[in-house]
Length: 158
Length: 158
DNA sequence: CAAATTCACTTGCATTTTGCAAGTACTTTG
DNA sequence: CAAAGTACTTGCAAAATGCAAGTGAATTTG
Image: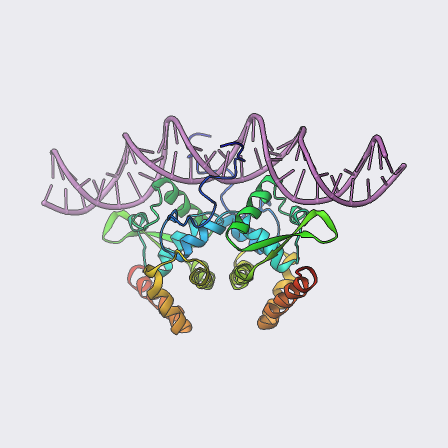
């Protein structure tokens, strides 16, 4: 082994073909990818806040550390949840975007939002615009999210 | 401090009233409770497999360790997701069951199952009966789950 | 009714994963 | 061409996890 970050395990992060999954259960396998405090926050930023850049993820209020963000982006890439390209106008920047797999997480995040709003008192106004939109017009909300993502793709993906 | 398990932090596990949450975001606050590889597996066992006892959770194929299970049950208790009683026929056993908060996680778990089935190749037949039921009759599936839980409650809760 | 077993944990300890601060290397900007 | 921006990596301390081995109360067995 020449050089290895502490975060890269030899056996790759997700779905070892040889059978590193803990069980054949869908929930358990999802947790092998998303079961930590940071991964879904990155997905949230991509889905609900239209973020696409490393630096934008760093700006989220939870304050993810650079090493964790870097690691999570790698895992999401290798799990096929996101993909990346270089910024067309700036070679030193990268753009991350959701694959269809990633976009398919919208219903999961949506139900998490609903549960959180109803059961977590510490969730405050900051998310209310999204909640309101979600409650008044659930279908339209999802459509709008996907439309926004598609618009970004038209602009940045060849 | 007299004696403290490594798993008990002084500041309680979930939702510090003083504001230990990372941000006012619902997703982030949910992850403070459920963001690890084990907690949702316990909830899964309670919801989909009708499990109610410590020993039953230990038998799940993922093989949770006793210290982790003990810790997660405590956290779920203090988050108000589950409650416990002593087994009426056996004082040395405890019975754990979902509160309304816990039962409200069904839509979240359901969407995770759907995503997992469509996007995780390693998910095998073991879960197929549940998937089939879910796909053919989503509403009925949820109703059945809740009916089963209610039946258990009628039997064991005063 | 003493001994073994069950049950729900706790404890100790090695390993792994985090969190934080400080680099590094390559643009891009002024 | 020096300063600033971008996407990382590295080192190290602290926390969480995984495993094996208790512990103590209650229940069952011989």
